Image 1 (tube, rainbow, N blue to C red):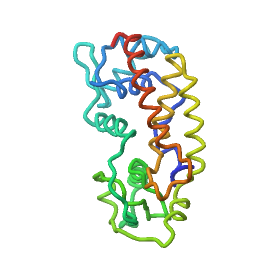
Image 2 (image 1 turned 45 degrees about the vertical axis):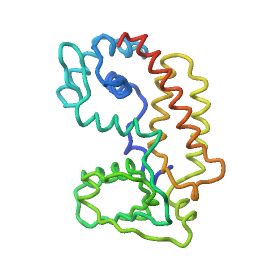
Image 3 (image 1 turned 90 degrees about the vertical axis):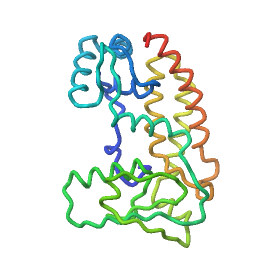
Image 4 (image 1 turned 135 degrees about the vertical axis):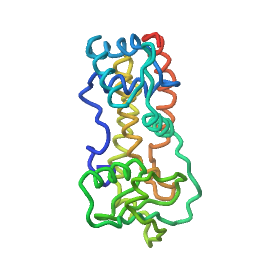
Length: 249
């Protein structure tokens, strides 16, 4: 694995459901609001019926994921934050790295399972690597505010390490991430149909969420991170326009 936690802590790509297609579509639109007919058309690309999409949207309203007004569905405030996170994948805010490492230490020894799972999800989202149970680290080259889940459960320190490249290699499977990024560059090049493009963007977004976004000093030679981000940005701009024309959104 690329992070120090299992993939189950990130949204899955397959199998596609009416909900996942509608949600992914809205996350990709700016502003994130579409009429029901447009969402139905996107669902049809994957064999999802009109009824299935409408039922899924009704449940999403009930679950607080979207709101509905005159047949137009919009992302909730909570999912707007997720969209902003997704949009920031191509250029996370950074600062000059001076050799320090953020170290998050879990302060509570007795935590319910739900809290532990929520913390792991947040640590992956904030590109932290798990050194051992209850200790998470990363180079302090990113500028961002940590969410309340992490702040409530952890104490933060700044540490230094005598061999930062080795530490980074122990926290993340960098060769594995790079190999998958190279594969996804090919996937983007070969994604011709709307359905293929939809799946390709979902795969790339998920993979970029797993990029530790290390300072240059800690990256292997030939690291494909920037190439994947640039290719995704170009691909997504073109694909979004094609999907908008198809769906009428």
